[in-house]
Image 1: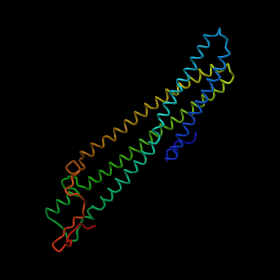
Image 2: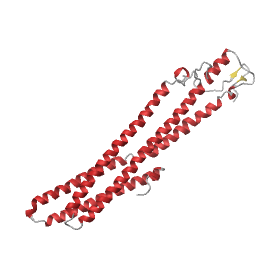
Image 3: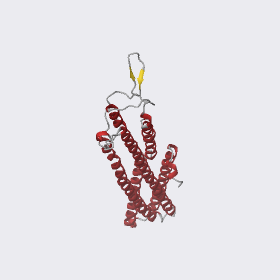
Image 4: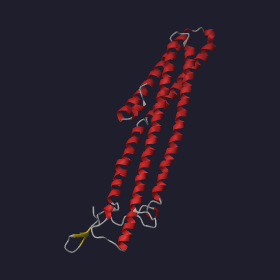
Length: 279
């Protein structure tokens, strides 16, 4: 199989990965149909006095058919979520481009140097303003600290989404390997079945191999579930960080007292602005 890991890097490549797994699955089914076909031809020629042998072989063919149907159904269900890794990568980028980077720009614009005015401002109002924006001397968090914490949370969420993408991507890599190995086993059994007398043992071998493959797929799903559960719990923990965080003023994100942000301009009777934050 081609390098499946590289196939997780773009939407087009993800689609190709799904096509490749589906194609291998279909080839395996075709080999199984060939085994059953050759087996039916052999059993039709078997003498009646070998009824008990025929019955045993029929059960082997039925077992093969049933387990292969389970494999096909399960793999097709799994392939419905194939787009998740690339979606998680793109969503992680959104957390950086739409949240972290803009917040970092705001942090820079309200830094101590950018918050100074030309005439030195002092007194209780100046102290309260600077404490709210930059943080109070007593350690109370200010808006810059809160913004930095939000940026940190955005970065952490990006890392978690990347981890989820990698975990699920690795799952599909493993699934692709399992399907490829199963295809190889079915191809070999189909070749053995063409001898006629080799069809019954080929069906038994194919059934056993298919059973192992199906069990491995179920185990793969269980392992994926455990890993995803751990990552999603970490993401859930961020809800607590956002709702109650010591980095926020008074432990929570401050509620706005105005509908929109402004530069603090004050206009007098002549309509001019005598004071504003220096930007």
